Amino acid sequence: MKKILKRLAIGVAVFLVLGTSAVAIAVVARENRTFDAPYPELRASKDPAVIERGRYLVTGPAHCTECHGAVGDHAAERHLVGGLAFEVPIGTVYARNITPDVATGIGRYTDPEIARVLRYGVHPSGRAVLPFMPFTDMTDEDLTAVISYLRSRPAIDHHVPSNDFNLLGRAAKAFLLEPTGPKHPVRARVTPGPTAEYGEYLATTVANCNGCHTRRSLRTGAPEGVAFAGGMTVESHEATPKKFITPNLTPDPETGHIYAWSEDAFVARFKAGVATGSPMPWQAFARMTDDDLRALYRYLRSLPPARLGQEL
Ligand code: HEC
Ligand code: HEC
Image (cartoon, rainbow, N blue to C red; front, top):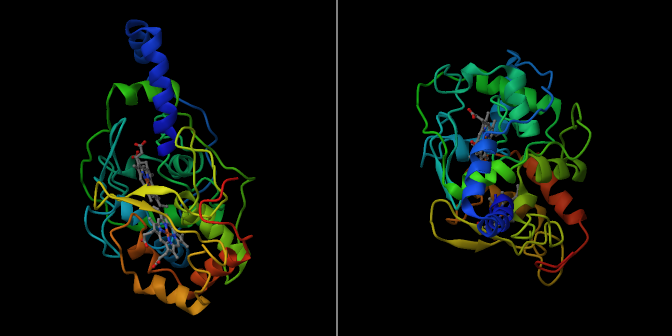
């Protein structure tokens, strides 16, 4: 999110210099620009095992429920009716209703259209979605499971307001916002298990640990710090305005936050699910299996030690 906002700040400075009327015309002409991206050939399954895997991802590591669930309700099976408003400098952005309702939810979209939003950041309407969701490299198997679970839920008619962009936001849509696709070739599946390899997949592609625990340029969003070395400022949604600095998750003896933690202590911290008012989705992560938590720990322990917020 910060990424766009800062690129935006630069863009806006440029507009002011160029003169507002020309810019206003350009914005109007370009703000509804659409993008092409492939439609993943994935179909929802009715297989209970696939749906169960999807439920686990949605309510656990991928924490879709934290953003799309009924506002203020952290229960596991809360309905994915959307409505949570993110007040950002470009305006107000709403997490959508992702129940199968045809009028107000994802019932109006095909499976490949939903898969494309998550993998390529391109909405069924062709617009770029704002980069709130880090799932571009999710495997075919997991993306299928997520969509299968969403399709299995009751349809709930719940209208979520359209995003409300201010001039800055309209300018961003016109000039700066581009969809982001997968960083790696698409994988069919990654074998789950308490391994560092699987931990890497969870940390970077499903649970977004690296999104918050890595320092980024406020201007471009590009990493400025060593991955997982923390030092990034993240704002809490529930306790606004409240800024948190993320801890260092690499095994640095002095500044590594979990350096002295045993694997069991790490698992226990997550299972306890104690939220700290921070933006970290502790309630969803508390639903992770022991194996997944062990995979995360083993992956983090395998990283080269770096100092808190260490520059690249
Ligand atoms: C950090 C918050 C966050 C998380 C986590 C999150 N979403 Fe979203 N999602 C959003 C926001 C905000 C939008 C609206 C973006 C926009 O309009 O540009 C959105 C849009 C969507 C859309 C487009 C729906 C429409 O009608 O436009 C789908 C589908 C979706 N999310 C599914 C998911 C799934 C599935 C997960 C979990 C695997 C998930 N989201 C996790 C915040 C989140
Ligand atoms: C939305 C941002 C965000 C995400 C995503 C996130 N974290 Fe955090 N994390 C934070 C912040 C902020 C803190 C400091 C405040 C707190 O303890 O909650 C923190 C704290 C921690 C702590 C220290 C907790 C303690 O009790 O001292 C650990 C360990 C941790 N995160 C690991 C992870 C792992 C592993 C993941 C991915 C599964 C992850 N985080 C995902 C923002 C995030």
